[in-house]
Amino acid sequence: GTHGLLAQRHVHVLHEDGAPGVHVRVVAGEGEEEHGRGQQALDADGQHDSSEIPKLVQPIRNGLADVVLGSRLLNTQGMPFHRICMNHVGSLFTFCMFGMYVTDSQSGFRAFSRQAATAIKIRSNRMEVSSEIVAEIRRQGLRVAEVPIRAIYTDYSLSKGQSFRVGVKTA
Image (tube, rainbow, N blue to C red):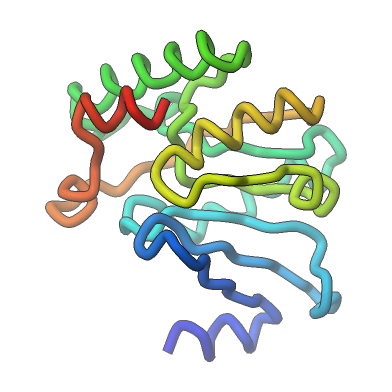
């Protein structure tokens, strides 16, 4: 299965307690099995393409960022119009609350340097974790980059989306 495939590539999957289905955190070791060089996190809603992980970690590897957020709004091809609008509103709310603007504050596809993964303190275990990460990036003074990602929209991934009410609550 998936765990066997990832183990062959020196990748460890850590299941997050308390948030079933919200996200899976992947720690890529590449020979540093115990600590890894960083972490990538992607929501477990089937919306993200794990083959884009190398693109996501590149700004960290190049020393340009501590945290990289995948942005669906930098590549809206195939994205339902109502999702585009809701994500813009969510990013605006997150900016108003935490003073940091990113194009896709509710993105579930992220990469963290080891330093950032250690510095960021997460208290929530539900959908609001995305906004909390943005707040922590700002609070910790971490360098952030955004890269365009392709979102995969299926009946399943669309069913996992946020309503306007839930979106406001999580921002």
